[in-house]
Image 1 (cartoon, rainbow, N blue to C red):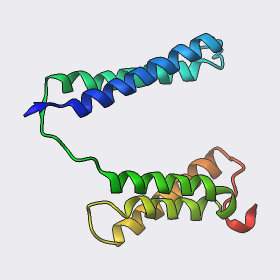
Image 2 (image 1 turned 45 degrees about the vertical axis):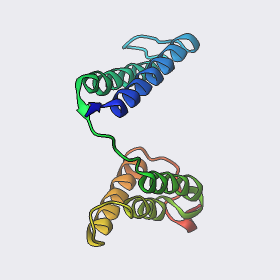
Image 3 (image 1 turned 120 degrees about the horizontal axis):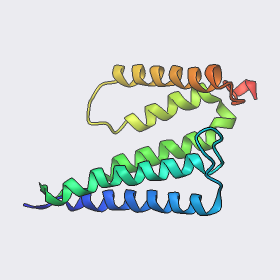
Length: 148
């Protein structure tokens, strides 16, 4: 058995990234206050939250024992490919089809077998995305390929 170095390392990376974002935003942008938030308020708060999450992940892992785990290359590549697909296809294919295909691509390497749960997951996330970005936020995103 050895220390959980994976979680210590990734918790430290998250903490340093959050600290860097918060520091950069506090130098470059005006923070404002709670009544009149400046452009730096949101990135500073997110950076501090990311720093805290990194500590929550990394510090307990320092005292935790763990076995060496192999890196999940298939899963990492599938998620990265699905995100790239989403970025390239959103303007061309529309939000609904792009979201559905992205979820199906990302879930294709999940250890749980079966197709029904993937289709249901894809439909639910697609409806949530449409509800949030189209109905609630009224963002000018093409919904279908022909609505550009």
